[in-house]
Length: 146
Image 1 (cartoon, rainbow, N blue to C red):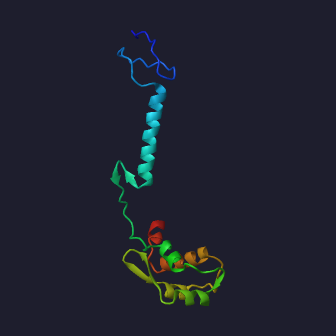
Image 2: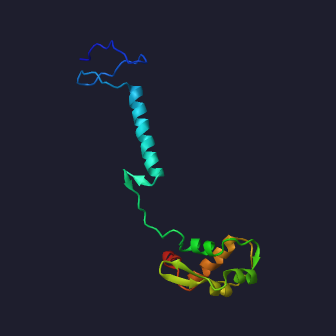
Image 3: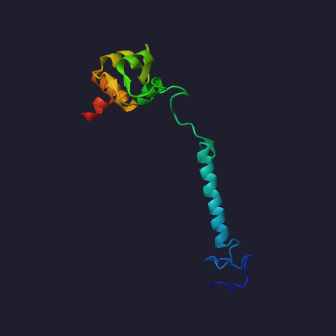
């Protein structure tokens, strides 16, 4: 039932015949290019944090604030490791961080309560702080283990 196809597009590709017997106006190559343009448009929207043309308002803390481990690392920004407990305490002074939203925690007191006298890396400090917060019951990790 297909019609005779003698016409071609500018690149020599014949137009596709539709099931209804009508010729399509777009070659497969053109359709692929148009689909590629749509994919790129969606990527551009994603990169600009827009989805389906609307602003992408992902909930999160305001810029410059952090919670959890990010709050700890933000408070310790600029330190050189390894570092002694005394030098670490001098850096944090009397810092308070929000480990969880609405739950301020005295970072200095937590570091004072740790057993370690020296920290080899930021990861060691974060682990010690996280463990201390968990022991004090301020973390959700303890509840997740049960």
